[in-house]
Length: 110
Length: 115
Image (cartoon, helix red, strand yellow):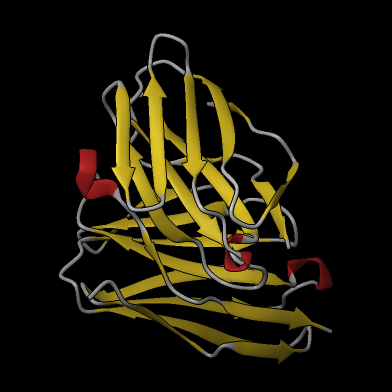
C-alpha cells in the first residue's frame, strides 16, 4: 500500500500564503492528486501531478518530486472560504485507484 | 460539466430496513466508485466498477451490495446495517482508470444514520 503522511492541522491568516506538505512511500507510482473537502461536503478535485515540477492553477499550485516522494499544495492570497480539509491522494503499486491521506485541516482566520 | 448526482442526501434507517443509495453521472465516465467516510477521516474505498463490471470489492460486508445497471448509474443496496455503518457515503466517477483519466469526480454524498 501507500504510506501517506500530511500534517493534521494548519492555521493561516487571510491574505497570506500557506504550503501543505504530503510525503508518501510507494512503488509503481502513477500520480498524485490534491482534493479540497469542506465539512460535510464531497471532495472536489484541485490538481493532478504525475511528472516532477510545479503545476499552477490560479491561486493554487501543486509541486511533485518523485525521487523524494514529496508533494506540496501552495495556496496564495488565502480567503476565509479556503478553510477546509485538503486531501493528498496517491496512485501507487501499479494501480490507478488513489489512496487518500488523512487530510490536513486548514483554518484561515481574519 | 463534472456533475455526479447522489440521492438521497440524507437517510435514516433501522437495522432491519432495506434501502438503496443511487448515483448518476452523464459524463460518459466508465469507472465508478463507492466510498465510505467517517467524520475527520479520509474516504475509504468500498467498490469499483469498470465498464459496468465489478473490478474491486475491498472486503466489504455482504450487507452492502453494489449494482451497476448501466454505464451512467450506480446503486448501493443496504440491508441489515449496524449503527457503526453510519457515515457519509460518496460516489465518484472517472473517465477510465489510466493516468490523467483517473481523476475522480465526487457526488455530494448520502449521509446515512443507522438507528
